Length: 389
Picture: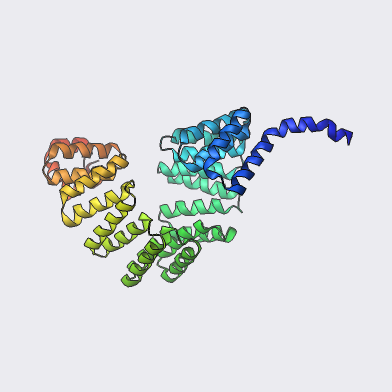
């Protein structure tokens, strides 16, 4: 008893911050004061400025909120500086860097650090696989995903990420058994069923794919993806009534979800019901005017199907205000300006699209750019025809 009492002050001193953090989480999760998370985490950090866990908790919270990734990165780096072997902080830092569009080089450096500190960690290889995949280094990416599986053959996440990579490479036959393994290891993980259903669709195993999409809808009724893909499956089979029915059901389940309306709009567009597609895209924009993709989709529709170029231009410009990095929208503006014989504006947008890595070869055969190809500037911007290389 005396021994316990003698060490109690030391234990309290060491675990004092942890006790506060545990009380904090009890307060948050039991009483539901989620909106005040950041405020209380900042308070804990002021009390314990050199506590790695306190920095990690604030960084993790900000990362999950996706509102201040710079601050999240700063707090996670501070946690690592205080405790260099803090695995969870490295892992969350990788997640933050992935979310930040300009963090790729630093992301690679952090992966290399994880390789050194935790040489048998599969997640470092998964993240590195993502980096290689983003750079179109498919051989290196595949090696990383396979290494993750070799290190953790019972980790469904490793198989899930490898399966998604194979799908991105359109290696559907190879992807099917990998998808099945991911589901076998973690049957309760709903997200693994989506790529599996898509693989079955691409392999034309339509009844099996339909079964998986229906299972997903039952498990995650407010997720738009399975409804949209099931609608596409029905459309491929010329089951237009079923496709429209499932997409309208999706909208009735989530009337405020613009993704559902976008899925219905795409179905109408692919089915040749252009006016209905336009109405659905406009409703999606009304629901979420801050989402650029619906402006781009509607702009494409008006450009290609209605030749309403002035309206399409306005939509592309609005979308670019929200997402100025979209090279396809810039390219389509170049097409519109070319059709209207405004060559100066057309070359301006074409140059911007090429600078953002739009596929140069496409421009040589695009009828919309016929007016531009008469000028020498076109080849200067786009480069020579592929066959002349």
